[in-house]
Length: 249
Image (tube, rainbow, N blue to C red; front, side):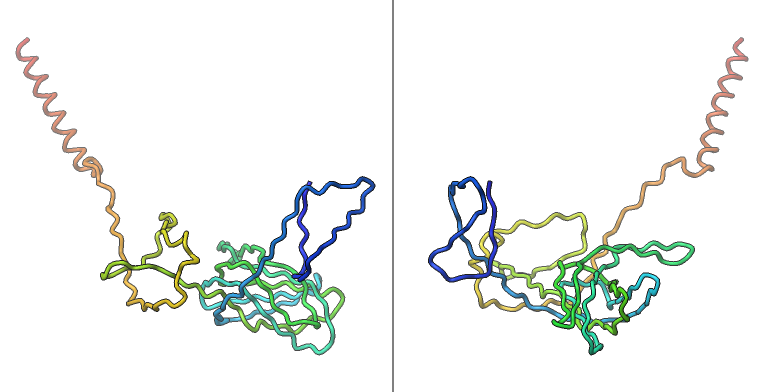
């Protein structure tokens, strides 16, 4: 049996572990490690619109947030203007797809994260980086008055593309082909050897590559006129041989 104990960084030379058990456990081995998290840099996205709905029967507040376009989101922050103390459960969802019906658009949602919001700390949520355009925020009010809550910032990680060029020529960055597989470059296995000071490159104008799809070859007999013409020729040939055989008899 084994287990992992996680605790805040502690600078000590000796550690003691107490196990509440009638049997004296035998310690075979122990390993210690320290993990750190590097904070990334973010870029903010413009919020196009915010729609608010109060569901009194369910004691819920729904916020529908729409961005200008679909972007990778990894952090969401809110601000509450109420001055009294509060503690509310919250769920953050995003639109996965939409279906148009006779009653309008029906949207399907996927869960990003859930937790609580409190007057004791700033309201900010780190979520898995997800490409989205529309968000749905569900706040459980319980028997309390709804909060005046508004989204302040929606951010995503800044993504940097690192490449090594060996020839003095023109290079093209292409994207948009869903059938391509992930590339395999040597530099991926030597990330620690990438120089700290890199030269920044500027992309030229975007050019749309139009892929010409050859249409299906139309069969010879797709047109009814050709079929009737060949049928007529066949009937004439058969008729001619029939008349010839009758004359011989």
